[in-house]
Length: 217
Ligand code: MD3
Ligand code: FE
Image 1 (cartoon, protein in one colour):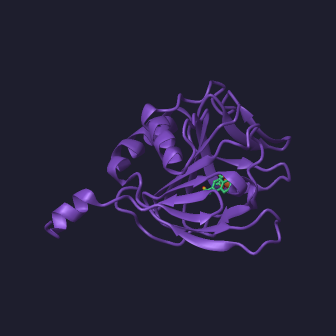
Image 2 (tube, protein in one colour):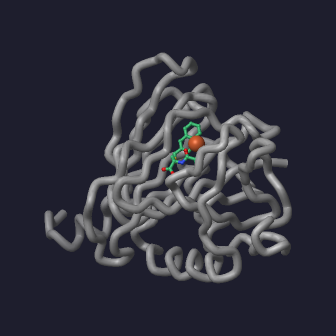
Image 3 (tube, protein in one colour):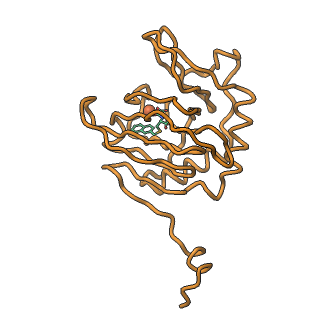
């Protein structure tokens, strides 16, 4: 058995780390398909552009968002909801690209959730200085399905709290290519993203793109 650099690269097992009960971090999971994902995300954004939405409390979010799939997450002065129509274009959200759907299914399986079939993908765009304050994702009907998140572009500090808003969050550095599967008891944990630091990414420039796959229906 040779300890050759190339052999070990070819045989390297993707890393899999349980960072909380039901939450599995897959470092670099999407690096092999990064170009396909970015290309598919560009096609989505061409149809339904990024926009900053307003919270029910009247605050303009710093993160810009769009969606693909049968439902998209939106917020406006009336509240949060999943909707089949993009209110900006008046048309259905773009279909979920097959490369997105396949990746979400494979990642969920690695995370211990075989058979994950997302019907919504929220696409978040962070630029330096933007942040996402601590929140729970609870607008979905099915909390048994996990949420799969994919980080692309600039690195971010992800804040992962507990089931109470006051639980002190742990901090994780999420870099380009990382995937996290959030299921089980982690599914309803408070979480957020610290203000994005300045930087330049070789493929995405001055931004971070995060894909979150959800089962909404
Ligand atoms: C933990 N997005 O879109 S992804 C969101 O980086 C959101 O854009 C962040 O929180 C981002 O709602 C974080 C990681 C994530 C997503 C959903 C979760 C972590 C989660 C749901 C439950 C617990
Ligand atoms: Fe969230």
